[in-house]
Length: 282
Image 1 (cartoon, rainbow, N blue to C red):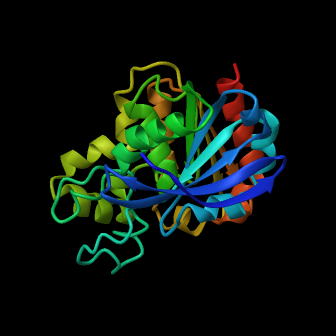
Image 2 (tube, rainbow, N blue to C red):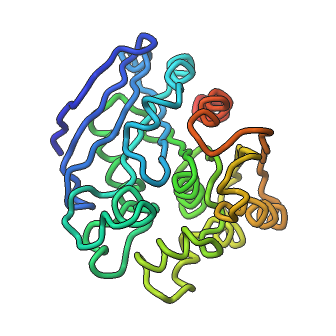
């Protein structure tokens, strides 16, 4: 699959790049950001996948999160895809900020007119890693995943649905129980149809209840002053209760005074990079 380089900037002795490619899974052009640490010039590196939240593109994380220095120090390639297909000319795709464009919710849609293009789950799980491993100096056996908000939901479900695929998982302010919140009901109902039992396959709180795979150490940071926490969109308590019941270790840190923004992410990103490096470089 041909990659077209869109931009390249030297950063902490490595390079922050953006590429574009034609996605077979999403049937449109897609962009992703990739940070190549200095170590990538001489050897294979593990890959950490970042999944962004509602309304984001590949740009938000690479320009705002200030992760590159830690990634350079730990020798990690960091890949940040877009959050949905783009320009598919589907009626209604640009009508709201929390559904359609910028809001793929990391599911494989089963409903018309979304099911042809809106396959972000398979894109992130299969197509993107194959593309990255074929074109960059990666160690395909060592990959991890993390994300923010809708992307935190994506990271958790990918790790829980694919035991052993990811060495570690973490999240910032994830949507933990989408079948119970307004964002989730709108997105899952739209992409998967009205049968709510089908939504459970993409709900971290539901998935954790039947998880029986390899040990997962989950790290979650949540801002205490996050407006979406108080609005009942994130529901971390439900996820923590399910983890506790299943004896799945989760470190949940409620961070006093922090909101839902990239200022919050940038404040704790180094802890997350270190968390993943512990498993990826083991």
